[in-house]
Amino acid sequence: MQATAIALLLLVLPIGASTGNAGAPASGAHVYLLRGVLNIFSLGLDDIAAKLQQQGINVTVANYLSWASLADEAAAEYKSGRTKTIILVGHSSGATVLPYMVARLDSLGAPVKLAIGLDSIFRTSLAGRVGRYINFYIANGNGEPVAKTKQLQGELENVDVGKLGMGHLTIDKSELMQSMVISAIDAVAFGPSKTPSVAQQTEVRAAKPSSGAADASATVRR
Image (cartoon, rainbow, N blue to C red):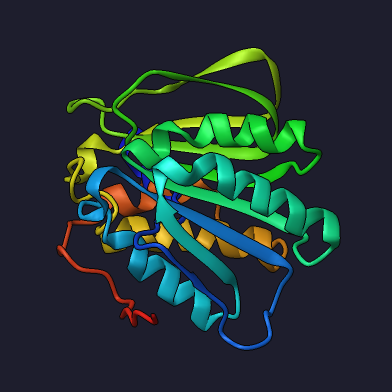
């Protein structure tokens, strides 16, 4: 049951330091994807970014070290009205800095609607305003849950995906994970749909035998 509930909570991962805008955005959302160390271990975020761009969603992919400047940029876009919904996705060290980015954006008057962390290996705590924060981690590896503080205003979900056959260096490249992340982002960017909850999706995925591949294809746009 836990493994199944895990499969539906997912969202989006990014890589590369690029900003994408496939013509006129289909929504007012902007997704910021933060890679981990060295920019070579979070390539699955590129796949996610490309798929989001195809849907008309603005995306920015960058290294985790630029989280503060990205937060300032996102806040400026939000206050100008060019961005209506801020969404964050991070892998490894990119996931580690997400709570800091959430807090900074909150202090700048630009609350995060959705944040998705993919296997931070450092202990972090969450404060400030955030609509929903999903932390996918691998407990039988080095992944860590995110702690909830009294200052948190929002929903926090810690989901152990260790039983789904993912590792720290493959979680962002898993097509199952990518589809869950994108589904979560779409629900926020385009409004509620009839898609099941993350917990429900995880249960369904875990109940099915792993094929090692997902149905979706990926196109990376530079």
